[in-house]
Length: 242
Image 1 (cartoon, rainbow, N blue to C red):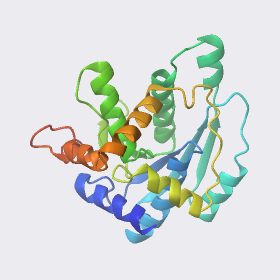
Image 2: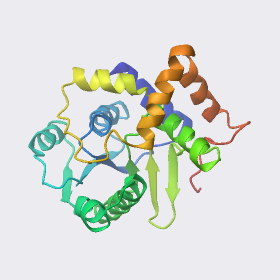
Image 3: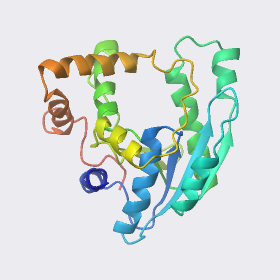
Image 4: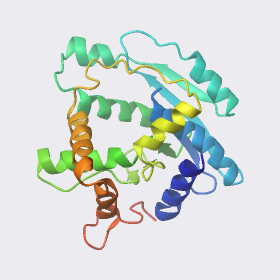
């Protein structure tokens, strides 16, 4: 966990992600990224001398209700309360709307539900499990399909909901997420989405993997480009209001 906590500390220091008194909601999907984030933040809370609190939030997205008992047990062991809400996202996206490319709409709807749940439970920040590879893949998708240089920010204030979204693992490579989640034996749920593995993001993942064979440092170089705020301004140090 040393690498994971080190990356979280670095992101926190660079972007002031967590401040004393924050009540941080952790969006838990059941995947490796969000479960590692939950585990890591429960440890980071101790490093920070308990100066912020945690609340796990989980929205189900599959056709059937999943067995969440192991995730609930993990949350209890970590001393983090968890709120699970069963949604009809699958039915809306695949049975009613019959979406062929559901990712963008699904993400928007889930984000809206999570924000509403955060406000209901009194959380002022929402932590999501995006890692370094997610940021790079988003940058490539934006460049190739939208014709612009853009990716998500490690810290984003949403004025409509008066909520700040943070991504504490934004410096952490996915290969480390895979390794440590196996080492910790995290209770990962199978992704219920029919589109899983057949998305533009998956294409970007495969493209980067192919490029890495010829240019081993490409991911680190792209991360440095994101952090070069003097040249690109994609990741300025802090974009929240003062």
